[in-house]
Length: 339
Ligand SMILES: NC(=O)c1ccc[n+]([C@@H]2O[C@H](COP(=O)([O-])OP(=O)(O)OC[C@H]3O[C@@H](n4cnc5c(N)ncnc54)[C@H](OP(=O)(O)O)[C@@H]3O)[C@@H](O)[C@H]2O)c1
Image (cartoon, rainbow, N blue to C red; front, side, top):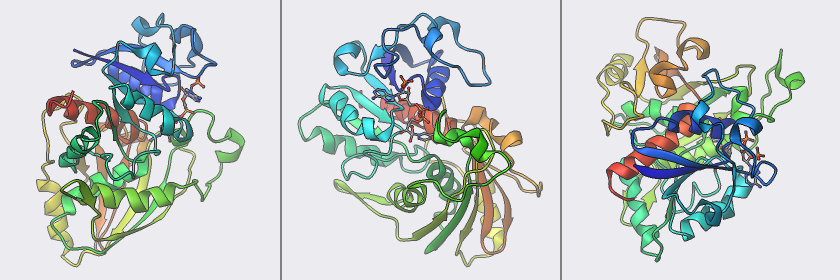
């Protein structure tokens, strides 16, 4: 077993980490860290558990640690669910201390020697860990993408063999994507907010890195453009998006690509049986309430495929789009013996 800790363990994503790691077959969850406001207190007393699964009782008495490598000496790997402005320095401190970091935060995603990985889409990009280690430290940082980007690239992965230059996407994103305190109830109910800070830029840049090609010690961006419009809607969990891709092949070929799709990896504990579920005959799917827990929240659902090429994709933002994505990255890192 590998000893792991969670940074930002009390937050919306941190709680998902605790849920996914409490009984993990490869990882032993030994430390939970949060801000100085929470440090020293028992997790069960301080955390306001907000998930629809029961609180894992064996975690209740764990005292929240301060967020520093010194107070987390017993871990080989940390999962980071820290706000980006805190993660930028803290994650480097952990890596400098020889600890592997699997991060949800955006701070380091676009740095040239830091892998931005979705295991089913670009597992080979973990090769950038060697580039980080060549700089003389054992620790390293691996990131997973923004919660909308990951749904989009997972849904685009089966279409890679087709030629396309232009991807357009309009998102309908859940409230939990903004963290617990993120959107005031009075602002979001009975409403749509047509702006999510920096979200469109993240979708437009991160997807090109993920679907790009690792050449030597750098990733060459994928040769298409993405144009995104992001919107917050009154859904608790599950980001939905309408996607247009300028593929000229007939829709029947795209349908077959989804039906025949095999992801690039298999056999990791958190990997769902289907990375992409394709709704072939149900015209009103996917829907967040009905489909977000497919594959224990790790499956991206695709439906409404039409000429254009147009379709709808949806996935659970705090599981597939955040904590589950990081845990899957850590499993791939373990399988590839980087730890
Ligand atoms: N929510 C999503 O769907 C989603 C998806 C993908 C990526 N992300 C990214 O994941 C990260 C966490 O998001 P979230 O939604 O979970 O946020 P959140 O609910 O606001 O939680 C933030 C966490 O960070 C801790 N924290 C805050 N300031 C700190 C400090 N100075 N030092 C140490 N810990 C500190 C908080 O601890 P206290 O409780 O002690 O304050 C809390 O545990 C962000 O970078 C976000 O962009 C989120």
